[in-house]
Length: 351
Ligand code: NAP
Ligand code: F7E
Image (cartoon, rainbow, N blue to C red; front, side):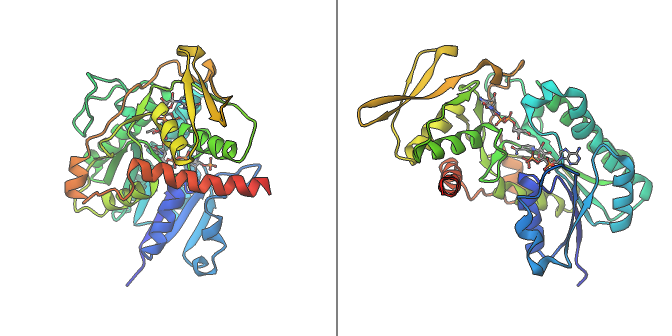
């Protein structure tokens, strides 16, 4: 049987690396778009690249979501069956500092891919757009968001992704392209970027466990997120494109935890004892060790966003039913996976 060909943008990112592994396991030929960087940016996919078994089914191509020609030529050359658009300036906080660039990459980048598909008239292509719970943004009476909920993004990132959501839907309706949105809530893993809050916490606490003297600076501890595991969620990205008809799906766990609860869970798993004291910007967290109190976490204004999404919880009933979505990782499993990985990293660093 002829192997399916997939193109993955954002292949060097958290999701891209897990998705590439999954597709290779499913016998796909995988092409990834990577950007030129002054230092190595392939750390998450090096294991795939150096594996001799992948020599004839894994290929990387330089390009950029801001460069229409590179995208057009790549799609024309490889003529993929499936395109997963995971590439993005994906940091919400950074999007307030680089709103125009974020819009170019995370918004117009999607249009560039869809336009290439339209011009090239490659009918077989199925297109996946990495949409996000940041589309919902505003909280209406702490409700739980599904595919029918109202959108109200609260950051330049959210707005860029809203554009991508709608342009994907418009190209599906107008040109009959098999184009789908996966509206994914937060998902983390040992491969999560270290500037996202979960990984920032697990990296810090595991180093602390091994005796580091550092202090962690965080922003809003009360924000709540519906956190799942990236491994579970990339499986859903693939399943979304295996449906008979193109459609949009919310993928979430239906549980929500605060940043503070993420810290508490991590601390427990590490058998550490902490104490919170003070309020607001003056709140501090102390490590209690052999009766002694050591400063662990402080609040820094710079990590607050000009506009915050305070509460996110998703209703993935449609995905449960149609995609047979059944997350393997609970919240505690996720935190444990990250802690175990980061403890090993911290031990390596010590050596
Ligand atoms: P990530 O780790 O930040 O990865 C982003 C990827 O996009 C990286 O490979 C990055 O390349 C690439 N990229 C950035 N700018 C680019 C450009 N101008 N041209 C081409 N590629 C570019 O993100 P992730 O967590 O894997 O998320 C994957 C996708 O899902 C993103 O679109 C994100 O917005 C969306 N999403 C994520 C979550 C989540 O909780 N993780 C939830 C909902 C939606 P470098 O490695 O060179 O930086
Ligand atoms: O923040 C708060 C922060 O940056 C989570 C992206 O993958 O998921 C991600 O966006 C919460 C926010 O993720 C710090 O204010 C406190 O309320 O880990 P985060 P995010 O903004 O939810 C969505 C679904 C995406 O689509 C995005 O691409 O934690 N917070 N203190 C902090 N956040 C960070 N980064 N750093 C802190 O020090």
